[in-house]
Length: 143
Image (cartoon, rainbow, N blue to C red):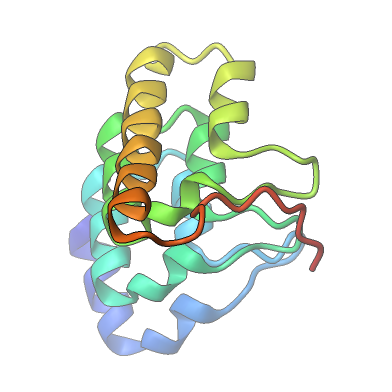
């Protein structure tokens, strides 16, 4: 619960960037993987938003972890508010967040897929409007 997490963050904020073995997950990755509440995820994001952009040793962003575990749509939305571009990167398996959601059969699959696709559409629309290059990151990044 947030009542436990908040004092721990206050006592040791550097722990938010400490990777766990195996896999190199940060606390935000672990929270998204193991079904932490949306309040806990929001607390971690508020304490260190940059963690939403950090990959584990398998190139998973916290969004990938949330999609693998079937996290609540509110969690996915929170991650996308902080780092909307997380819809594009692919992990070591070559999977984007959308690929993961399509492959797995979590009960909230349709809702999460809708949120991801709307975010992709907004990013593409904004890039077209501003004349920017295509925002999609179709590269397979290796750590």
